[in-house]
Image (tube, rainbow over all chains, first blue to last red; front, side):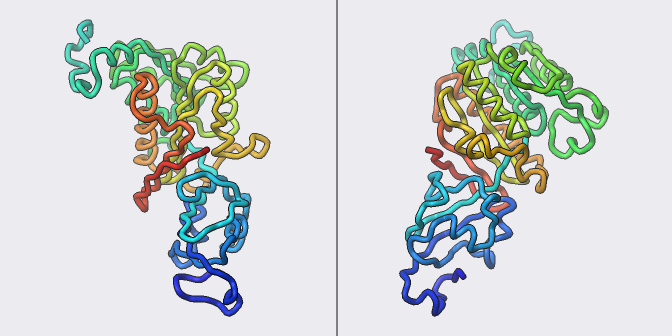
Length: 92
Length: 235
């Protein structure tokens, strides 16, 4: 579904694509495609859709940061957004 | 300080700290809740820097799986209460610190009484639902909380003042809370625990001395495989 850097699918040709930087923390890191955090996605994609499209069960994500600020999963992504996703961290 | 049995004990605190600030620390009381990977490091650092009164609470006893990271654990202390080991360690480092230790798990019935005189509460717990309870109680007592949490080589630190949303911003609504995080899958590595404990101790001092930048409504995140260190806005 998502494409790295300059690759585009026919399916997404008519949509305006944006680039985002995705960082997945702790146990979520295994869902990061091809060890690269730079993804090309359709403009206005919500974080919730992004999470589902990269294959992470929604309930695994506890904290969403966009450009260093906490956001909800209905945030609509913009070009060059930096996205960080955390599972719950509770150890002491 | 001048009255110390060990003249010069705090010499290397100066002049990062002033004599006046050292006295403030000596008169301060901090409650450390949870004496595992985070709490053990926090005890060590607060005792050395000169916080005068420590209340140390944990109902747990040491087991072998603690030895990989918990500063207070030693092979010959397996089966010993963590709170007892903490008291002994603080006494050995700095006998001028007045220590109250309690071998008990905190709950809604006992926590308020235990922390009500503290200037700061250090949340070094390992259960998310207990953290929510701690926040509720500390806010009732109008005491700031310094939060630390770890999983693997990832850590989080923030400071919560009375009236702040606190854990709701980190773990979501209380109704959706869960007891444990992903640390049940990742374990915890010693240097990450002590790194986060150091950041918590720093936050504690800044609150006590009303100095520096405090992580209020901000979450410091650290991920040590990638050397990611960042401060996120929670509101």
